[in-house]
Structure formats: C-alpha cells, structure tokens
Length: 263
Image (cartoon, rainbow, N blue to C red; front, side, top):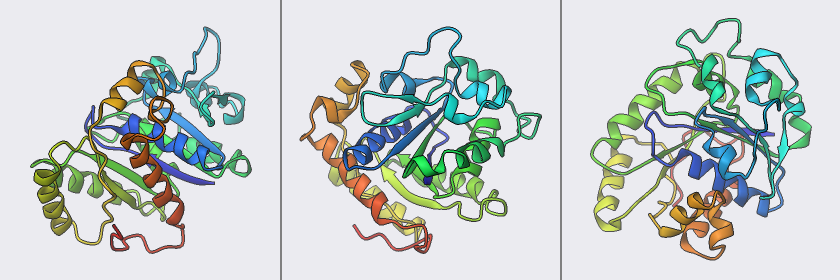
C-alpha cells in the first residue's frame, strides 16, 4: 500500500478537494483506495457522503482507545473506503505531539490494513505549527506528500517553508519526500504560468504537476457533498484529477525523490 499525505499550512488551498478527487480517480481506475480524514473540520468525511452517528467510532478512537483502524473503516458510495472523523478529533491535536497518543501510532495502525489497499490518502488540517495530527500524517506518509498550492507571490515562501518542515522528519521516515507540487485554483493561466516558471526556478528538482484550473464544477461538487467526477465526469475538473491519478500511478516508490518534472 502506498501511503500519501496531502498537506499545506494554509487553509482553503484545496487539500480536501485534492485528496477526495484523487481517491475517486484512483478508484475509478481499479485501485483499492483508503482515505483517512485527519482534519478535524471533517470535510473529507462529509464530501465522501459518510455520516457518523453518535456512538460510532472514528479516527479519534484509533488514537485514544487504540482501536484497530480496520474497525472504523467505512465503505463510501464513491468507490473508496474511508476512516472518518468528526470535530472531536481536535481534542487530541496538541502542540505536544509525542504525548501518550504517540505520533507513530497512525503509521503502525495503517500497516495492519496494508494488504487490503493499493493506496492510502491522508487529508490534513491547515496548521502553521507541527501539531500532533500533522506530525502523525507525515510520519505515516511512506510514499511521500502532495502539496497543493495556489500560484501567487507568496507561494515560493510557503512551499519552501513546508518543504523545510518535511525535511525534519526524514531521519525517521526515510521515504518522506515531496511526491509532487500541485498548482490548484488556477485562474489566469498566462499570468500564473509565469509564477509557476518562477517557482520551478526557485525550487529546482521538485516535480510540479499539471495545474488544476478553477472551475464551477468544483463548487457544485462541494455543495452537493460529492466528487467532481459525479458532477461532470468528462469535465475539465475531472480531467485534471484523472491526470494527477495517472501521474501518481507512474511514480513508483523506487523512483528518485526529486526527478525532473515530465510535464
């Protein structure tokens, strides 16, 4: 199972949109996909159509009660499985990440379901500091991270900062690398293409994926709590995430971490 974390310090940057639509795209291609909602906002859970009733176990109980992660997996109608969460997950997201809720527990828990899936995709909360949940997600990301970002004048600083934080955990998770940088919510393609070129020059050696253009299909998908594939399966939004899924499939774990972008 290839475990990939989708992360960025900023909120509203497209992390949940990316992890959700990538999960659907991979599943539509025949892969067995497990999603993990590690963001207490629980937007991935909502958009996957999963309703957590009172008394039902979630990712929180995997940490606090050491439930096997397989016991909280829910099957979605969108083709993938999900470890859901609720806003109660926020109660363990502290600035003391190596407390009794070990940051290594998520990685160990996922190993138990490794034979059942081809991919595990972890959604994360926006976080300017290295709190418990983001550290857990980074240590579990044995196949690297995808970093969605909006191409603007602050992007280079933000992405470089995040890459530096990721580097801190390479000693423990030796396969932790930036799988790809993903430009999202791109509006003026000509203008932002100039910014993407500047970003590539500022961060040489990192793979920048094909940009995902802003489109009304994403707003409709969010409003109806579903994926862009269910709103417009042949639309440009679905096409963007289909191509991202193809890129992810092509990137094998043995491939050098910082291969040149192949467009």
